[in-house]
Length: 488
Image (cartoon, rainbow, N blue to C red):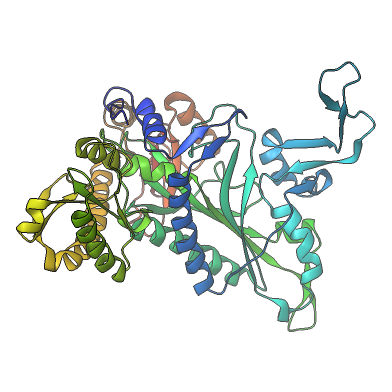
C-alpha cells in the first residue's frame, strides 16, 4: 500500500479524500454523488449503529421499517416540509422498462407512467405520520417511540464521501406524545444520547444547542443539534433532534382521545444521525499518516504481527496472546501474511487506523516480551508477555481518553469571543473555529453575516452564561451570544 497522502497543511480537502480511499473506507460509485462503503468503513458504521441502537432501546424505543417510496401527494401536506426538501427529491415516474425497438438496449416504457409519482425518501416524516394515523387512537397508545435504520436520498450536486452524498445511511426516530412537555423532554433526551455517543464512543467533543429559525429543520418548531469542530477550523453538524409540535399530526390528522375524553392532536419529534459521523470522526482524529480510530469504534482494535514473518512458533505465541485478548472482549487480528515485509505491514495498519499494534519476534519470545505500538501517539514500549492482556486492555482505554482530550483541547482553543465586526472577520479568516459573538436576533442580519463571511450561526448553546451586548454587525441590542463558524 502506498502510504503517501496529501498533508493536511497543504490541502485539507484532498487529505480527507486520500484517507477515505487509502484507509479503505469507501470508493466512488458509477452513480454520481453516491459511494460504495467498503468493509472497513462499513465495520465502523456497524459499531456506531449497534452502540446507538442499544442506547435507543435502553430508553424504550423500538425499531420498525417504512417504505422507501413516498407518494408525491404526501409531501404536499406539510408546506414548510415540502419547501425544505423539494429541490433535493429524486422522483420515480415510470414502473417498467422495455427493449428498444431500434436496438439501443432498454428504454423507459412510455405506457408505464405512474398515476402518481413516487418520491425516493429524503426523510420519512410524511409516510410515517400517514401510518401513525391508523396506529394512534387513544392516550393508551402513547407515547409511540419508533426508530428506523434506513437509507435516504437527497439529490446533491456537490458531494464528498460520508460528509455529503446523494444517498446515505442513517437512523431516524419518529415519536408521538400526549403533551408538548413530554415531546420536548424526548427531544432533549435524544440530544443528550447523541452528545454522549459522540463524546464517549467517537471521542469527539460536541456543543449542544438550538438552531435559529433560518437553520431549523423544515416543518419543526425547534431544532436542537450537536456541533463539532474539525481540524481545519470548520464546524460539523453531527446530529439533530427536532420538536415538531403538532404540525405533522395536523397535516395527517393524527388525533387521540385524551384522558378527559376529548380529541386532541398528538405532539411529535424526529431525530437522526447518519454516516456523516464517519466523516466527522476522520476529520477530528486522523493525521498525515492516515486514519486514527477511537478504540471503541475500531472494527479491529489490536493487530499482532509476527516478525520478520509468520512461523509455527511465532504463530502459536501470537494466537495465545490473541486468545487472552479476546477473553477480555478485545477485537484482535493475527497477521498471517508471509508475502510482505513488516515495514509494509506497519504502514498499512497505521494507514487504516488500528489503535494498537503488537510486534512479536523470536527475540521477543526469548525475552518474554512483546513490542507494543499505539497509533495515536506513535509511542512504542516493550511489555512482558504475562501481563500483555491487562496492559492492552488498559491501553485501549487510555487511547480512547487521549483522543477525546486532544480533540477537546483543540476545540476549546478555537472558541473565541468577538465584540466587533473587525474582530469577527479577523478570527474567521486567520484562526477559524467557533466565534462566540452577539447577534440581534433577526433573520436579515443572520443572512447578511453569512453572505459577507460564509459563516453561519451553528447554534445558540444550551446552558451557557447569557451576557447581553450589541450585535457585531448592526450594533442593535442582543440578549446573548451565539456560536458562528464556517461549516461543512
